[in-house]
Length: 241
Image (cartoon, rainbow, N blue to C red; front, top):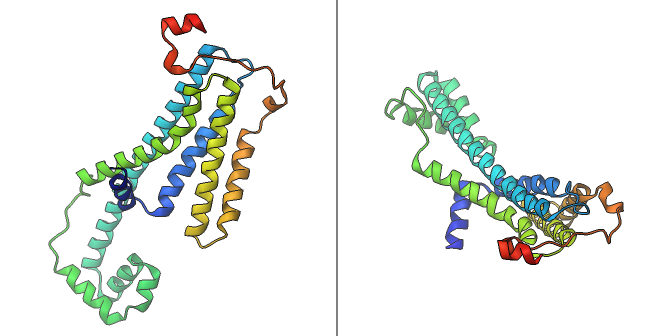
C-alpha cells in the first residue's frame, strides 16, 4: 500500500518538487515549534502546542494541494494557448512556438523539417475547446496525494508532544526529528542536482538549527514542565497529573 502510494506521488510530482514540498512544510512547522516557550507552559499550553503543530501541518498540506491545482490549471491553459497559436501561425512562427514548448535539449536536435511535420500533425487534430478543461479526477486525486505527502511527512514532528511527559524534552525531540529530516532532504537534493550531497545536507541542518535557536535556550534548563501525554487527558488522567 505504501509503495503504491509513493509511486502515485512520483507520477504526480517531479523528484525536485517532492523534496521542495516536504522541505517547505518542515521549515514552516519548525519555525513554529522553534518559537514555543516551554519553561512557562502549563498542561493546557502543551495541548495547544500539539493542536497547533497538527493544525500547521494540515494548513500547509491544504495550501500545497491548492497550489498544485492552480498549477495544473495554468499548465492546461498554457498548453491550450500554444496549441491554438500553432494552428493559425505561419510555418516559421509555428516551428518556433513548437521548439519553445519543448525541452531545450530536445529542441536543439530537431531539424526544421521535423518541426514542420509536427506543425502539420497538430493542424490535423480536432478543434481545441473554447475554454480550458476543468480539473479531472486524476488532478483532484493527485492534489489529495500532495496533501497527504506534506501532512504525513511533517506529522512526526508532533509525535513527541503525544507520548513524552516532559514538555522541554518533547520540544527538543521534535526539533531533533525535524533537523534530521532536513539533513535527509538536503542530501537527497544534492544527489538530485549532482552537487555535494553532504554539503547540502549540512546546509539544511544549519538552517534548522538557526530556526530553533532563540533566547529561551538561555533560561534555566531545570525550569521545565511535566505534563500528561495527550492520550491520557481524560478526567481521571487529569486528576492524577
